[in-house]
Length: 568
Image (cartoon, rainbow, N blue to C red; front, side, top):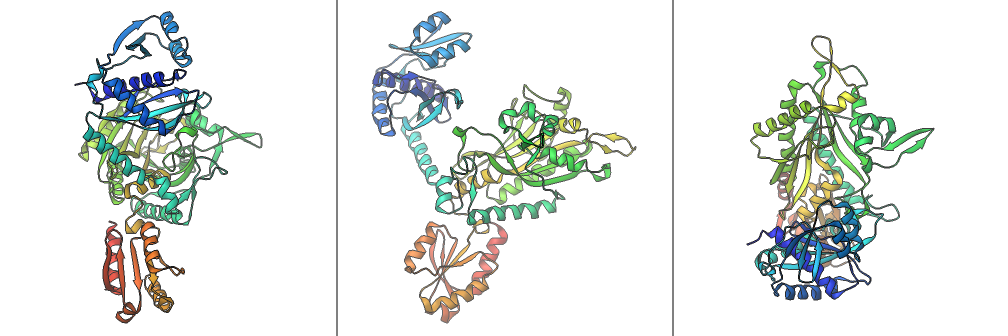
């Protein structure tokens, strides 16, 4: 049987064939196989909606049952131009392709290098489904026309398809954009700008909890905290190499007093300048600067997505300046500690990727080999399995990326550890060694959570908004049964001053308040009435368990203090 990726690619062609039959005036874009499925881009003369998908899907299934063949043919550019003379997007691609191949399926011909299945009988018609319609710029460029992209998912059988659709349904329920609004964590306002989130009070509390945890933990690891500006002179970024290697992701310069400045896309040059504020000795190393630094990068509007793809974000950034002799030990330390931090937040399943030298790079091949071997050593020392990501390194050095698996088994890129032999050279960074001579340090870039925005978006989806007690912006609601119970509710709140507690005094029924607390995913709801006052107790409703009965207040405090200490 054909590989599922080949089946997915062939389904993209069958989708194009079907669309061409149903909408003869449509112009064809491209249609590759992607993870879990396929898509095809079309330029329709009329609007189509997701209501049309079931009709298109039924027709595709009829085509599949016709035992359609896929025949490959290599042709000249002249012949290709003649075949696709009414297809402007295909003609544009023909200009860029050296060796042209087409695939024929009946009367339908598509420009494609393959591979494809031999016949549509290799496709299980019950193993695929068209899922959604979206807009997509031709070649991903905002200056090009907006096309209509039809997505589908495909598997070898109906059972696997059903499992995947169930996962999609669960993912939609966990969508951090929807939950972010419902839980009043953040919003994005078009008047302010796409990709620039606004943090509401509860979301700000969540950020503060994470930031405080990082401050505390990194203090134990001998990091020194710094704070740097949001803009810097253009020449800084020319020296760092970002202006040459990273310009497409940077915003245009701002002119101030005849000088050009940039919104910073990275914190590293600023940390270098702090390092250079005085002469450093080998005795000062390793020197670790950490910053929760907000940076700005240009992202195309089509890829912006809630908190997980934004234009302004805060990195939990750090730079370690060390000697070559210290490098291996430092890499082992930060990698080990990074995994510990992720585990605390509930991420214990992950994959590790070691990215090697890209085609465009700074420095020498010898430097790159030395740096890559140091990363391999750290993984070996900690007995960590890793995969090689060929040419996936940043222009200034190789790196290790940790991709965590969330509760739905989806991979997310989070932690990154990068060795840099190049920026110290570019900025003439040095320390004084034991012999009193200038020597160049090695610089390690590291981010444990990536960015707070992306990390919080992932956290929301991982927990479906039901954060563990220590992360919950509001940990406890107290609901007095009637007005005469408000005084007792206030006394309880004083006893619980160590926790994030609210009294719900709105003029609504107790059941409605409880329901709202469940929607807001409050970990503990305490209901107090006459009996609770008499017994000096509270009636607890625990998230996910419902009413768990009455308990003495002091016992409840001990219970949740223990839960907080464990950070479960």
